[in-house]
Amino acid sequence: MIDRILASRQSQLALFALLAFAVPLLLSGNRYFAFIAGITLVHVLWASGMNLLYGYTGLMPLMFAGIAGISSYLVVGLTSIGWSFWLAMPVGALAASLVGVVLGLPALRLKGFYFTLCSLVIQTVITLAFVYFVNLTNGDTGISQIPLPTLPGGASLHGLPYDLVLAALAVIGVFVLIRLVDSGFGRRLIAVREDDELAETLGIGVTRQKLTAFFVGSLYAGIGGAFYTPYVGFISPRSFDVLISLNVWLMVAFGGRGTIWGPVIGAVLLAPVPFLLQDYYMIKDVVYGLLIIGVIVLLPAGIVGGLVRRPKPDPEIVPATVGEGAR
Amino acid sequence: MSAPLLDARSVTMRFGGVVALRDVCVAQMAGETLGMIGPNGSGKTTFVNVITGHLAPTSGAVDFAGRPLLGRKPHRIADAGLTRTYQAVRVFRELTVRDNIATALVDAEAPLARAEVDEAIGWLALGGRLDAVAGGLTLYEQRRLELLMRLVQRPKLIMLDEPVGGLSSVEVRAMIGLLAELKSRCSVFVIEHTMKVIRELADRVVVLLAGEKIADGPPAEILTDQRVIEKYLGSADA
Image (cartoon, rainbow over all chains, first blue to last red):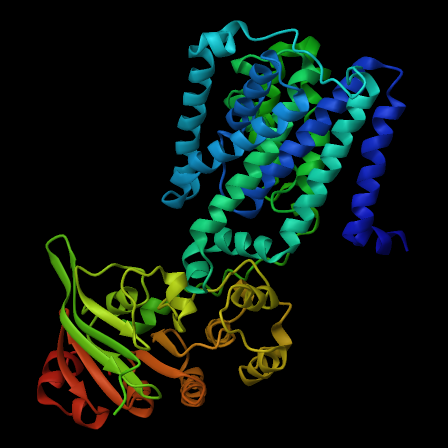
């Protein structure tokens, strides 16, 4: 019975929504734990966006954090010149999306490993730009005391209400991803991931699908970045460097790329780790490194992907023999 | 006499210093089955790649159903009703047969109606395999799935690149039967090394040799042509 209920995506989403709102409420007595929950919810949003690109479209964008950072710095800059957060946030997120589309252009030519390498270079350039344009970003020192978003009536959004806004964002993010993936758009992306030349032959406009995926994925990055910034109150180029991209990627890969819930679970399990290991910060990166290796070797399809493993194609029947028959 | 469905004129394709196609002219009428033969490396697949937009030729012109094709992207060419299969069978191996079919339908310009899709599935005997992962199918099943994924798009012309490659002799026999029936559904262009396929299916045969068309005519004539035998058939296993 419970199995049956949990099998439908609506009930899974309802359960996730329940947990996403309940956890900050339950943790509201301890600001530190509630804060970790909030950060985790931002990562759920980021992991869902990364999942659209990596899990469904088959592109590993290591400039994901950089795109989130562009939105973040824009929002901070715009609010500092007097804009309301609620106006700056969509502007910043949309700008990040457009930048994401432009930075996704190499994906039209490069596939797999080569695109990943290219995205690594792009991420490095973005990080350098964050350091270099000191008068906009305050360079390596970073920007602190970022004001909280104000609510109608003049109060600022903080504490539990902010946690609940993040919960709502995570739930909406997952909901939108479900709708996208279950639509024709999701089918096209999977076709592009599996074999883009065949997709093209079947009438799918691969260029348009890839760029749309970059727009949507970057929008997730940008919205997450915009809400992350006042929540944490401090950003620096290190907040959006390649390690952050890799962390988000790891959440997707660890949980199960190309599944709705895998990356959500990955984010919930991994986002709190840096906080829990705070006293052992020396070994934090080692733990991450080991996790990356462990995932690649032991769980190539991730936790969820490993659980609902589809039957493997029979290795006996390889189309490599096709060409030989002709020769 | 009406205009040809496919009209390729003086198509030349150069890769650096290598000429893969030189001044190739091929015309195919609607309803006609055109075979293309030639030794390996003679430019047959390159020709299909040029026609279907995977390669931009160095020079030449291609019209399909009265409209120029060159410069259009492969997915636009598919929209126009011209589709192809691959020499090495190509399906979405990680997806189920059902999802493969659904993917073929998602951007089809004039998809078959549901009942027609079911009829096509039945014709290709894939009804029992809908939930199987495509990569787990036998090669012959994958070849049929490949055909099915084209058929549901209601193509005007389907270009088959060695449709019986790698199949057993029993399967070749069965596939020839299917392809004979396919001719009533759309126009067929077929590249083959297996002469039985050409002999039984093609209304006309084009012979390529080192990128040049050396013969063009009915199979009975071409397969006994002294030049063709010397240059190709004599040296091949057929």
